Length: 159
Image 1 (cartoon, one colour):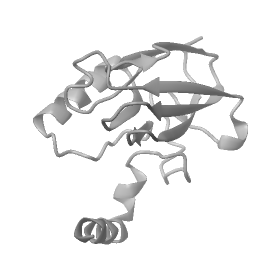
Image 2 (cartoon, helix red, strand yellow):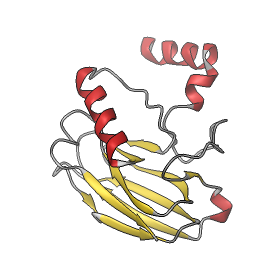
Image 3 (cartoon, helix red, strand yellow):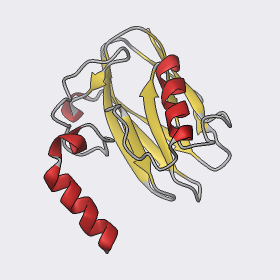
Image 4 (cartoon, rainbow, N blue to C red):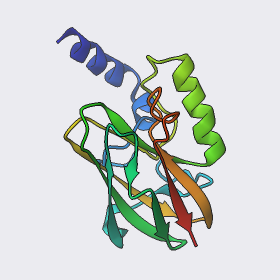
């Protein structure tokens, strides 16, 4: 109860911090139009398809790779079939490696500057609507300490 109250106070005191945290498929944060090297938060009404991605305690995503057309808006539905907390964070290989290192050096870190991310509790499902507006090869990964290092990484190929 005390933690929930502190979290509520933090959200009310620092609303901009919430806008930069994980997307959970709800209203887009205020910086939703911010473009990244791998795209931007998409408009749910413009999603052309849904891609189901499962994650589990084997430290793998299924599928391990997805193909997307440049400019396509997709709904990524991440289901955690494990007993541990997992997340799906979109990014470039270099950015994800850097962020994974930050997470390792600060395991209490729960905030990500990456708007292309969703935390998924065990047995739950989360979603992220994303527009991949740049061609290239990108990644999705779980950056919880130890998960990335164990190989919990997937590939997004945008053509």
